[in-house]
Length: 171
Image (cartoon, rainbow, N blue to C red):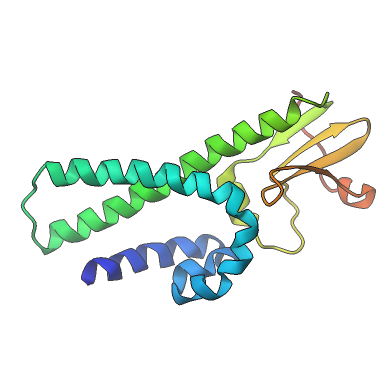
């Protein structure tokens, strides 16, 4: 039972990165209640969770196979290590999957410039009503297109909104 406590502490501390968006990690019963909100991202999250689950499962297998002598300190470190592995593999899988989807979506466009921010940056700004940092944008024919994790595609932004997001790098 104490392993769950350390897992909870780990995710509660991580949720402080953006408590407004990641608050269910700090209060696990809220995942059930607010899980409906995150369903709109399920097409993105499901493959990422499967990927990070396999990586973490493989790490657990290797640690169990090592047959380490377990005491309380080792068990706590093992629990924290598994959570860190899951978090890092989740962020890595999410970044790779996001880049794959964005590159695939850009194949049918001829953008003047493209700007792609990291998934970790998206976590920081996710859930805010007035986001001033886009997940990814591109400019084509003087129109600005924004990346949406819920649609897994770009959408055309309104002119008044587009002025807040100058595209900074070329393709």
